Image (cartoon, rainbow, N blue to C red):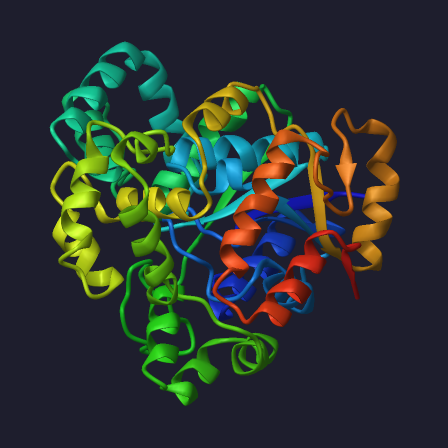
Length: 395
């Protein structure tokens, strides 16, 4: 069976994602579509509006055949580490094609930028570090480093999906994979668009519209399955977690907070200083945000506070060349057939459910899940937690 791979978050799954699924199938002529999906927390440091199992159901109803989880270890990280984890999973599954959406839409531009960067690697890395030290966000520092290193490219490496796409290409090269990487152009909606203007809308605008009770606008921009899940499932946002986050920052001494992944350069003192003045999450981040400490970086640190993610755990396990296991969240009959055809070729364990003590990275996953479900009523949280140790969804 020939498979194409997608790297996704589906926060939530919308019409633009369905277009991506359909176009990837058309471009590759594949028999099976595999999605590597973030779990309960996203790359930008946000609790996903719907839990991973609801989003898996939405994906399977939209044409995906197999959903595997991008472990928390990689999911709440900057673009390069996010890409490293996701691409290594697709490579381990022996997927033939990786297809990503981008603002650019032509893979030749990505390959040209990659060649230019490889020729100017030392200069690029030096300038990138300088720009990050100045306090620029990763995307700004990345784009500036390309310009100052004299890397000529038609690719805009300040746009979010181009940054991620380029990171996928770099990760594929580092793994020396035989997987072919390609891209399709994103249509209409901008990644950060704040309002719904048509049937293709950004996930950001959909979450915002739902919060503002603009349900008919959302209904026009998402598949019916997503809309049903938004209406019936527990929804998550940062504001719901703020009381817990506030409690943890107030009651943990700075010496403990500094052990949290991402809590660098004395940032723990800034957290302790401004938490007293903050009435909600938005206000808190507005107070601690600076040019050096970007909103996204701070959100990721907040996720790691909630999940008590320690620096030493992350550092120990990020050094590996690839993801240590593959965890199946859901599949169709086609996805099941694909797994049967590849099982003997796999070099890493295939998990259909997680258990405590299975692997340190899996333990971290369950720890993050406990943090995510902690805001729910106890009986709902317990039922949600049981999904983590249950067999995959099958449709």
